[in-house]
Length: 167
Image 1: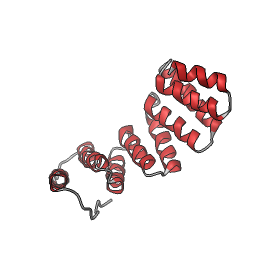
Image 2: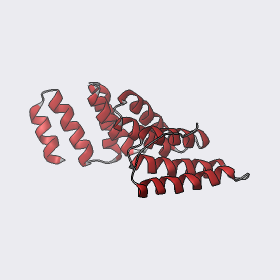
Image 3: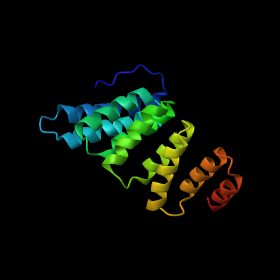
């Protein structure tokens, strides 16, 4: 997918983006560049776009990186984070779920998907995600906070207070 976006940014940012894009294009031009190297080049540019909240360009880079290296869950994870930042919650859930399927020990994906399920009023799915995350990292503050929010939404105030205190 071609990354093309007209943007207005400060000169220093424009220079940084231009330099990183040139580096990526240099890797693309290498006749023997491996798919993993190409994916890393796209991903690095995507991370820079992401840092400057240029989400559409970041998404395009992450998609390219994922296509080039489909077993690297990290690009899907970052794509999901960008989708979430854009308010594309269902898309983010699907991306986090795919990332998690590639890396079942991706604790952050489980916590993020649990939080997204809460935002989407999918309480049972949220609880399952938080319980799986709890199995990976017992007592984690982010899991406790997620379970606290779940209990609060269910009006289980004692449980919510206990989870928030533990968080």
